[in-house]
Length: 422
Figure 1: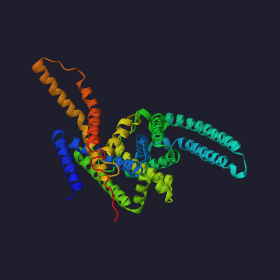
Figure 2 (figure 1 turned 90 degrees about the horizontal axis):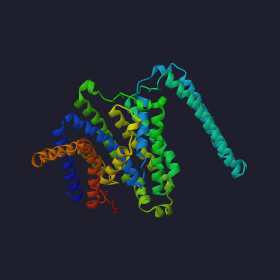
Figure 3 (figure 1 turned 180 degrees about the horizontal axis):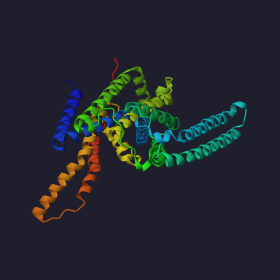
Figure 4 (figure 1 turned 30 degrees about the vertical axis):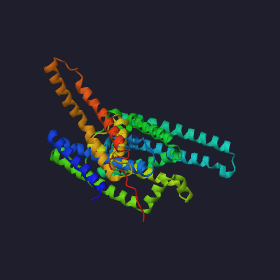
């Protein structure tokens, strides 16, 4: 048995012991819920690791892709709203879509008028005028439709399809948004790309939060249908275990596909681009095109994992998407586990989420002990906000963990293994 395999066995063995402690102390229902959420985040982390670990793309807009995929899952899987479909709302949205399509075609046609010999300054002016006219027409029609739908039907509802269709739809739409973002940002430096992705993610969240006709905004949408029997049918432990089996199968399928791709000539090409961009370009590789591929594929996987996560929560609340929980935590999972190593990413996702989830009860237990013994031995009265302080310990513990890991294992706990060719 070689040394890397020994390390992996020790780490996963330690993780199994940690999970056993969680199940014993918090109960099976809590433990299975934590594992399902961790497995959904592991899928999201696999999407990020092929962006950052495979291609070196600095995506800090993960929250936006999860939010978009989450709403797409709601749109596909939530029951049909008959009040909407029996009203004039669909016709009004159809007119809005027609304005958008015609305006988009006219704007695109204006941007191509240089082929007819029109000077650049006139082409730009014509394109801006067409774009502005399209925006005014679409925003006006959409505003009227949104006001009507909110007054007559509340919101558009869903299509009543199976949840897994929504996950695939969410992945596809996240990939489409990634394609559009990639076309704009992949030519930028890493720091500028990070700012751009962060900004677009906040735009997605703000739109979903304020589009009451589409998402019900802060009123939230629930309950979301599950792909397996719900707790009302089987009980918490059995239903969550069934959900966990679905997400575990998804992880295995994605893991095997990524491993095969990484070992294929395509993976070698991506490593060459990541490690030495100039040399890869000199060999005739289209750098931006290949990076766009990775960005889109990564976002598709992020969208699928995000859709599964939102479905499990059974509620869609646009206000609940936070950079700390849906971007920063995913980055910690990838960095701590080992960027560019799929097994390390899965381990990092499970380990970090266990630490994240258990930090609060562990800190609360510790604070209670300090309060008890402080009062008994020194007549010391603890502050009344100890529970709030225990919640804040999450960030401290995660920060301390990643600091220690980066100090003693800067490439992650299960780092990428260099590939040697004979």
